[in-house]
Amino acid sequence: MDSFHISTALPRCGQSAPDDTLYDTFHRPCDKLRIQSCQSSCQNRVGTPPRSLTYLLTFLGICSRKYGPRTVHGVKILGYNVYFIYKPENVAQLWKYPTTITTPGVSTFVLKTLFGMAPKAYSMYTLDDSGLLPKPRPGSHIAPKNRIDHLTHASFHKHLLGKGLPILYRNFAAALMCRLPSLAIQDEWKQFPDMMDFWLPPMTSAMNEAIAGPILECVNPSFTRDLLRYYPYLHGLMKGFPRWCFPEPYRLREGLIRDVKRWHAIARACFQESHVDKETGCDPWWGSAFVRERQSILGNVDNWDYDSLASSDFGLLWGASVNIHPMAIWNIIEVFKDKVLLSRLRAELTAANFQGITTDEDVEKLTAIPLLQSIYSELLRLRIEIQTVFSSDKEDIRINEWRLPRNSLVIVPAGAAHKDPTFWNTRNGEYPLDRFWADRFLAYPSDTKSGPRKTDRTNGAKDGIVATKTAQEDEKPKFVTSGLVNSYMPYGIGERTCPGRGLARREILTFCALIVDQFDIEILSKEKDFEVTTAFYGTGTQRPRNKIPFKIRKRKRD
Image (cartoon, rainbow, N blue to C red):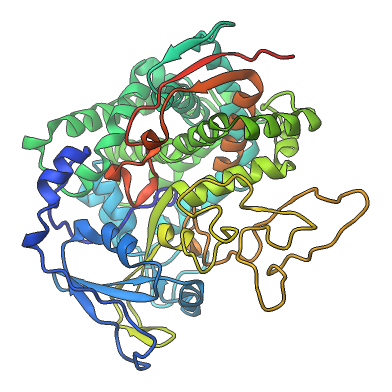
């Protein structure tokens, strides 16, 4: 699935469970492993592969955190060569192979392992060698209707980045606003046990309705609850825990697919073209033009049936919420932790005449607020851990001094790139890269040490930023993301960069602005409680290890 990133598509090697206790039980006996450091040095000859080390797949993430960000190093797993690429100058070398480099097996792995699709259906992704572009790759003989990779990717871009984006976002915003009253937030303080558990249900339910319409949660009013209960089992399923010792996720998955299939059956029986809203393309049965188009595309693919379509749309609903909504909640956690930051952001919202989140004008106001944009971007840098996988089946890949043999797996870890001390600005260590700094992406005209990148000490200026003063705009910061190519990759990199990034940005910015403007929140946790769990490592937004209790009330305005 294009909107979802996984740590790797390698064969299973070991097993895992979603909680840290089981993780410790099964995966921490390091005396049983042969681990050899293989950091490659700049002395490697051109045409020489970096050395490899032998260890288990479950330690891929640990390796990337321990040795990166350095340069290039490799792992040997069950005969597979896997290479980690660090540093922007090395990552840039991948783009010299636009016609040969691919992302092997990712869609197949996800559809099979997480969404329970039958082999005859997910094998169509394996057989499709035509690529993502409108013109098939040379040598491909896939029938046009079976170009499943290109067709689904184009549909994602149309509805998540193109003309369908504003409609899908407005439907989400309207559905969220309808759900907020059910939270029963009053004028007086009320305490709740966990921020994530409080906000995820209304956000996820609103997105489900925006995509699928109202029928799905009529079929099963507990659909959103079951979907949220399924999330924590991600790594256990990816590591192949069998059903006999891990029954709950399999039971939940079967129920969720069954609910989607029932929704599809009702929609097929009841839908008529006259039900489609001419302005938005939405209808009460399928919900959105996005889903109707997917039914048309995927329903024509060989070996796909109603079960396959249900598994695919289950994956769509999963991908639309699993990373976006926890990230949105991290935004309000960091803002309400810091009273000074809260006051600054509220002042910016007032200056922008912020009044709501449901119109395009509302969104435009928010995207013009540098501080809000910087908070969003900094949390993507800090809380995202994805590993984008590439391979070349046609030729070797040369990364500066190194030659990576064809059919090797090449992994670019975002977390290591996002915490590279040689690249990112810390103001001489005042704001470490493992800590949130709301202003990291802001450049102040009179401060050459501001902005996301380290200062170039040879000329005292920031890359791409000129320190100038004007009478009207002295000290007004600018939101800066220029110069971050191949070092900032919260949505992945390359041709499969997450197409949902436009929708994610709108959701996160508007949710943060809405909650900050409408409510007072007091975080009751200590700083240590904000540490993240390893259970979601490598799959996107990291979750807090502990619950984050809080108090909330309607905002008291002066």
